[in-house]
Image (tube, rainbow, N blue to C red; front, top):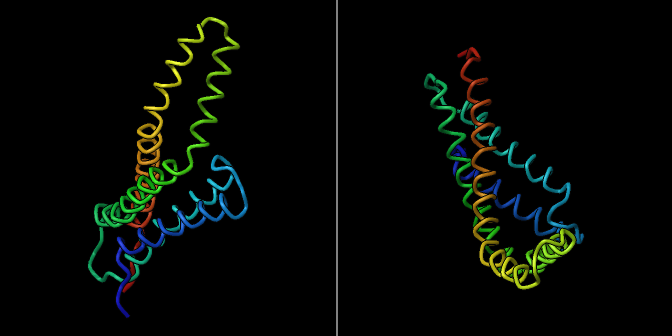
Length: 165
């Protein structure tokens, strides 16, 4: 049987995470900002750890920290890219989330009482322009940081284990 590559595991993991997001939002009507995110991060973690363990079990050559981290990196970078694209597409078609956040911000600014209606409207226009870049960049950054941490820990752990041949 052919060895499953880290990039393939990244594609499978990312597709699973996207599937969970879509099913939870459209089928079960669970808001995008809910505890389902914990399940998605759990799948992300399992994907990276599986990639590291498969690499550990199937590669005969001596492996060091760099080799393990590289394998984890190949996995999480694919997932981060998929999730950034998914975030862009999802929020392009589901503008209600953006509009709700802007309305909430407007309400809070009105309650503060130190902004004129014209200033609040200008702020809303600015938020509308910045919403997509903020959402995509935060998703990308979040998955890259979490992926790097998981890969670091996994690489540190697995590179210390004694292998018996």
